[in-house]
Length: 443
Image (cartoon, rainbow, N blue to C red; front, side, top):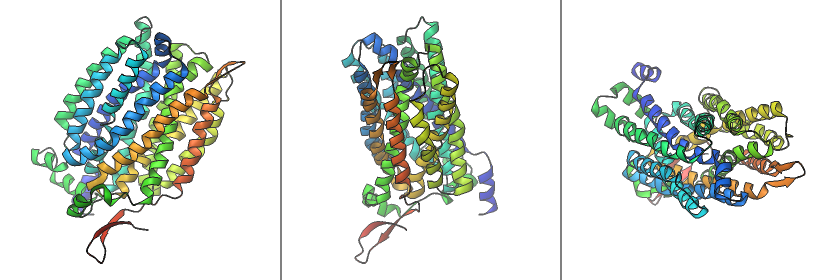
């Protein structure tokens, strides 16, 4: 590495501005979805819904979200990440505002579908932007920092909105009117600070030539003409693509299954008040901010691979999740400990798992790769909350979520098993003897 590139590596650069803006805008995204999940117990009572109906309402969001991933990744590759993120934030801001007006189950389902389609066009373009702006040596930490959005947001949002709701007399509807304001802020900062490619900011004078050279020297790339010709066909024959999708399916099933039901679990099985429930629901995610960054740092600085961190995360999560649902009512200190451990180990893997496609596939198809795999993975987020609604049951002591957490532990076990078989080397495109392009994975 040259002295110029070494200096670019050490300095604060415009790539970090891009990363912070993406982080802030995604926090806004999470305000909307976490607010709905936090108030599910109140929405259920207000609309007179069953646990099964609430489970379906929580899950249908992720079905729409999964479907949107594929088109989001394709559009990001074709028309640019920034335009697709604009579309996403406009739609989910409008839907969030209207959520405060919902009056029946049908309206609630339609709004959940709309929110899923809107927010589903946000992640893949954001991930592609990180891929285009950060070299391979920084992808673990950059992706880990971005991934703290789904730790930081659930850590602060339940506390903030439950206190606001309590101050408003316990009403949940007004929160969704207020949340339209951050959406407008997100549109403004996205427009001013973010560009699809470093070349655009180099031309505007915001990016130095030294940083530009450093970024470009560390990107995973391929022959652009060949990649454009083949499109997603470059990578769909890679077995690791499908194994990775299953790994992501399991992780998202754990994360969104527990996130969808954590407030109800604390409210119903353990009998906490609205304010206390909000504080306790935030605990796993407050710890996750630290563990997510730790996972990315371990990948970049210690292991230089994704698999060791993923195995630590999934294997440690199994006994924690099994025991979580067994904690008796009144054992508050024990519950707090398990919430902390759960948040630490389940979330350690985020930066690593979303850095994996950036490490393996050419940047020219990364949007499509992330869109496809995240679309398949998000089906786990669709199935898990729905299944959990049927696994909640009554016992002599009251409502129990023990079977729900056993399901989450099963997902962790499958994810750990799949991790052993993933290949981590960069995916290679080569020509065969007949001058025909084909894709192959280096072994």
